[in-house]
Length: 209
Image (cartoon, rainbow, N blue to C red; front, side, top):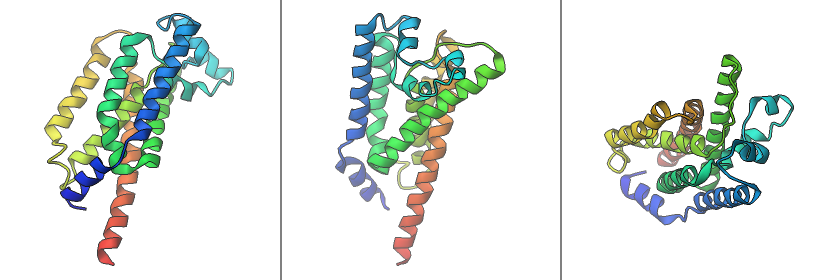
């Protein structure tokens, strides 16, 4: 697939799953506000945020539900802007279904990594947000940056700079789950790479035929 085909592919598909996830996040946030203060830990916990003691009670749905909950307007707005910025590229390249799998896998892996690290440390926090899933999408951009035909559109220095700027607040600001970001980044990158290899194999077979 040459660069013209890739650009045509990225621009020809409406990223409706990206828009779907944005709408779902916003609607759930509205419900949070109706229930109470979205910045209050007890409200977000009631809605399904990740919390170790609740997980141990068998509330496994929190691994997924926590991906769609946010603490306040700034938290929601920052994540939705990031999703709007990167989602269409990943969805345009992989298609709607594979994008959905990457997004959810990244979110789940981010929360799973939080769970593992909290089990190890013994310190339990209420965790929520779509940032794990979004970090997974940014990880996919690294795959694009190493592709010979795509590096012009996704130059590696710019992708790395974007990732650094994404990760800096994780280390410098309190209340941000660095484990969720790392887990999401790793999960999304791995699943995206597997899909990428799959698509490359299909393209190589078509070339040989």
